[in-house]
Length: 173
Image (cartoon, rainbow, N blue to C red):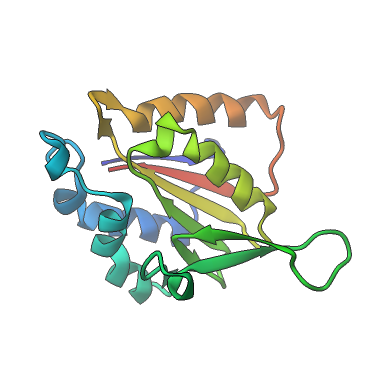
């Protein structure tokens, strides 16, 4: 398992380190290198979320239970000076007091540029300070974690686009 925190020159907050440790504690169960030999052996993003769910909940995260509407976590986006949100984005896990959103991705993280959508949505959400994106390291013979890192590193180092997020953690499982 690998991880990178952005901006690279900032220390990783303790609340984010605890998320890293949760994924590390389940590395043998979710490792994409060990379950990539056949299509049947691949864990979906929902499967990975189920593996880490109880540990996230023990850390105070609200975790999506299923894809049913009643089980989704909807994060508001306030537009202008309105007191009611008109737009919502769905997330996999959320810790309100720390302002952390977690998105667990599998095959489409890089193929469909889902990681960019995750970054955009987190930047739009109200009261979100940190985004954690967990992606497969091994997918279709390539390392999605490294490919996404190659996008995020210059994104943060050039500072041409400014986000109202204190930090972003990329985890490769």
